[in-house]
Length: 398
Image 1 (cartoon, helix red, strand yellow):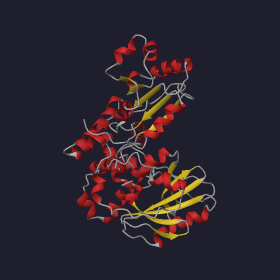
Image 2 (spheres, helix red, strand yellow):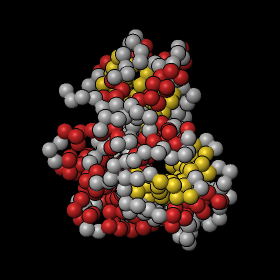
Image 3 (cartoon, rainbow, N blue to C red):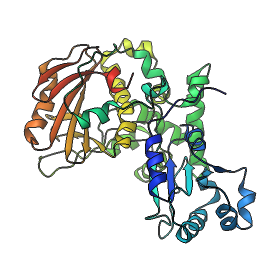
Image 4 (tube, rainbow, N blue to C red):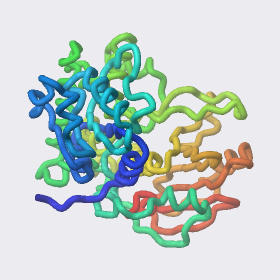
């Protein structure tokens, strides 16, 4: 058995078990949910293998197991299982009764969600580079700068474009050819469309379009036209791809304090290596096309930030005005604190590279805690009041 690599989400799962009867652990297929949950569970029900054990009297069977009880791929038992769990935890609401893992959210929960007020949700994302290198139990970059927005005075490591092709799906670590694995992964996602009565071939084409639009803020119409599907089909595919946690668009920042903000999301898939595979790009091709490399570099940065944002209970968005004259690549809102990130492929960004962050600071001075130009070099240095240049290696926890 390969050595277990700690995950950033573990602290959130443990906190959930201390505070609520049920922890619902979601995330893309093959992101490591079962492996992580099994380390924290005292009993386990693995579906579909154990479906017959639930068939006769699920409530009696589950109530008799030692807590926490892992129910893996719970959705295979149907939403009725959630009503059974509701009954169990209503009778005995002590924290830490169940961990439910699932790689796809049902299209509908019916008239109500049975576990309202009884469950804590946690997302397990594809692994960051820090997690891949075994640093998942260490304090994250984001946690440190939220505690103290003054940038840590340390030197990072230079960026290597090969990082973009290293998938955050744990199985890729053991694969002789990760691109074949990722192609097969996309086919499995497309098969889900077939299971729901949709055209798997057209969903694959839509996935490839989204991969080529990585890190771009574009309206839905551009996606459905490029995919050669209609608006209704796009809505169905968009819903499905988000329910299986493969498409993770970055929403637009919303503030009535700023004018003319676009509402378009930035398009991202959950794993940068998956995006490159679907877009039929390789590292050498990216190195030969710096603007294209810059977009996937930004996607990589966002992938590194997502689980860190989850761990501190913050939110992630991007800011762009309708005219495109103002744009901040990533905004993190953590309580009353606002952090801005610009992503630059340059090895040594200048004050000019931080001008959009300076604008955001001046627009929201009461909330702005820090702005960071994430770059491909190795040095940490100031770029102005509350503005810093930060190597991507530090953000990634390398």
